[in-house]
Image (cartoon, rainbow, N blue to C red):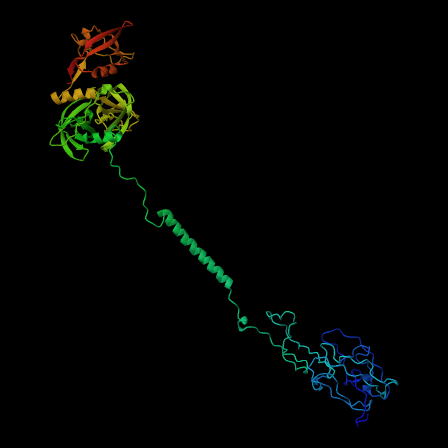
Length: 580
């Protein structure tokens, strides 16, 4: 049908005129396809005809290669050009794109067009070529990612040369290549922009400033905290250790004991005896001394050792201090150096507490005893021990050199500590009764003696039995002097044999055996050796004297005498002699 319009064959993808100066370009997202051979142009032929010789898409050959627009031109739809070879104007493409009049959305596959009619051979084409070199694309769409049929592919834009990105540039999102420096938003349909100088990438404004090391500050804070904690903990621990805690310390304590001690305990004995014990301070004759005594009666008589008050004989001074601290002056009533006993008296003192006297003959070895005195002027000192032995004949004194101060004592031995200052104090039994007068100690450096040594107690103390002390005290109070029992013989003090030997010759103008005396009446002769007294062995003259003085004058005494190697027993009655 001839509607007045020239009939021309329909243009296909393969016979579109190519732009001048074509440059082969591969797609941006795929490998280069195989190149198509371009038939050589005949002399005098139109150069554009060579492009028409390329096979069209969908005709069994390779897809036509796209050609980019010349540099500086704006990519866009190619205007329809008349096809001089085909004798008619070019028709716009049938793709559903902008301006195609189909109304299809971009990218939507267009409907399949009707089959193209046969096209006459164009000038310059080989005879018989009535259509496109390739079969038409049934979808009329280019491959995904390539330009449409109306415009060449956009040029590939390269980033301008410039310095490398600064260190610390943020990484691109995952799956996307980093954007080159200096590029803005990429528009594939615009031409290449003018080269721009490379600009450094910048992040957050705070990124340019160096960050302060928070790790160092945290470590310093931790060290300061640890130091303060250690100092505080040490101070708290020291306080707790020193004070036992943060509260006031109250130590546990038993309730007050209001009960009395057992009467036979040391505490019970001391409680009953201390009020009757006194301390004596004596001065006179250029000497001073301290000793102990105890009250005998309520009249103020006090018994002590003779060597304690010996320096006060005549014009000396004696001061008595009671256990309660009260003091009073005292006078010497009398003393006997042979017994080492003396009596003093205080006046004007009330509420005296006399100590009861016991029986020294009934004491047994091992009985508990308590000694009270003022050792080294420490008054009211209480010590305890036992009776270690009985009948220890000791000799003490003799400091004057004429034997006038020598004491012969048949003593009680005790291990209760007795020291200088204890002399004259009481030795008490378990019932707080006086059984002896502490008189002598065995000192490690000076031998036996009454306060001779100053080395202190070594557990060997000696006390005058109270039975002997009572008799002497009564005589001193009643008569002012004491009597001694005698047998009427003179002893050989230089005899080294066992026993006490009667002297062969008279001494000091007297006969070895006093005529009419107790020994003469019993048949004892000069040269006899006395070996026993009342059945107790005698080893020397001093022991014999001590044994005799342990009895009262007028008492009967049984002696064992050895004469010519034979022992015989003699019984006599003790006489008396005043100690001048």
